Image (cartoon, rainbow, N blue to C red; front, side, top):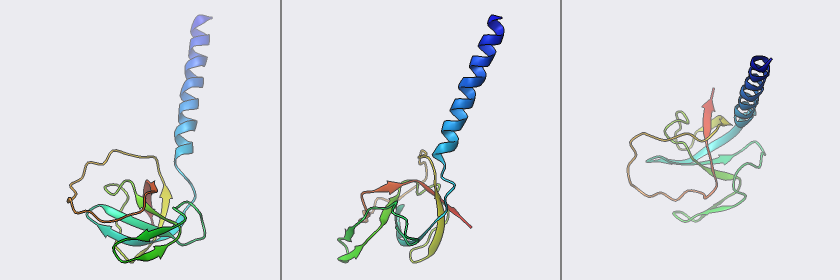
Length: 119
């Protein structure tokens, strides 16, 4: 009897963990424009009307005002991005970043999201 109870408890714990992990990955696909992509400093403006970014950001390098922007928190794993390009992306859980990046400072928004670019 104890073995059955332990088995059911283990199944319950494992299924709860899986459900929690699945909730961390967004199934929503957003559209955006890459404003900057320099040395792992990536800024994206959300262009589909969603409000997942910072509501307002003034880029100090050129004094241009942007709405609905964020910096990419996972530049090593987000996928190919080029400044000026339109992208489609999903939000993903944060992940360790272990790629080589230069030390050049580039202004980007304070709000950060981990993303993955989708076709």
